[in-house]
Image 1 (cartoon, one colour):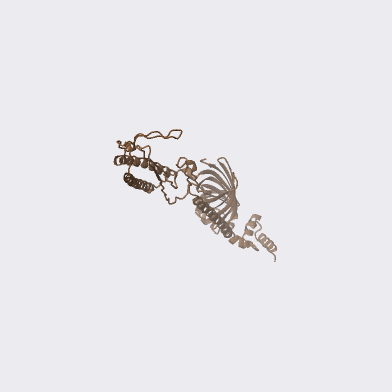
Image 2 (image 1 turned 120 degrees about the vertical axis):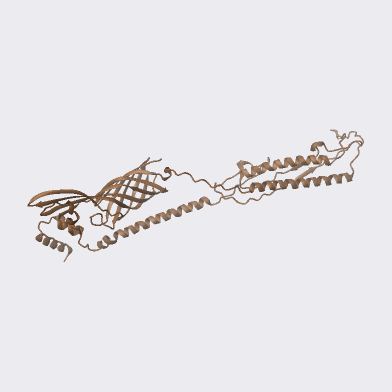
Length: 461
């Protein structure tokens, strides 16, 4: 026997027994009949399968985002080329325009300083009169003696460090050379200069006075003393330069950066109004959203929703649909005397706290898509009961309101949607699927689809 023929026979038998049954009663009864084919499995496990697929997609998206951020962090921390410095041959100093910097996050490397110094000494001796005693000029001023040193070449990772070392080196060389010139002027004495014979432009020699030449022994002693002075000078300059470089390389105390004060604008808060429409309910309420991380938002709010009204023809229908006795549950609200009760209508209102986690994927400047998951926690529930009572064939309409005990946590929500942004105003539209695993007040449990629409305002630009 086919299922359609079976339904017709059942309906015919029911109508023969209770002809007053209306088509809505049969519609409710037909929903409780077992479905055929693949639908029973979908009704029983479809919610869990869809929830598992959406959670897997959500975790895959978060994992991909984390890997991309880690790759960007590694690329940004990769050391680039070291800064290159070149000496200017004309001036002998490091120019700032010859410094090439790669990135602010270039890792510091060890620095090796190569110090080179060349000393060239020119000495000229002239004939002097026999009665003269030549000496070097006091205060170390000798026009015929020249000591030239080339500037040491440094290669470092910091432009400011090179400039400081170069200036300090020049100061040390100046002070040391002045001191050595004074010392050399006091120690070394030579014959003073006399009148010097100059050559004429035609190449002929002019007459010169009788001169007295310096002996070889005096020249040897003079060169020996000058070599000792130069060696002492070199040692002092090199020691002073090494000390200055060591002082520069001492690590400065590490100062921990202060934690910046908390600012509400860092969370990018937004306020909005959200409405929902599903197969069995509708509601509206305010909502707020925060962004603890980029593209990751947490929203929560207060929502008042009204469930689909329950309609029962008689007490027997209510008892079979809910599994509870109407006379026992609402005894205090019933009239003292009645013959029968019919046309029962129950409308339930719920105040809930919706919580959802959203991840946004930008597509264009003003358009983004997002995936979300969350739940709706019931805070309180109210019922409005309406029924007709009969006493001695007299009809009376009864209505009352009562508090109901809600189930705090009874569902899971999964969905995805699109967001449009214009200036500080945003609009969102997202279909969702709600899996109810517990009864809502006195209504039968069941999963349903719905649609959410919301309008947002960014509190900060």
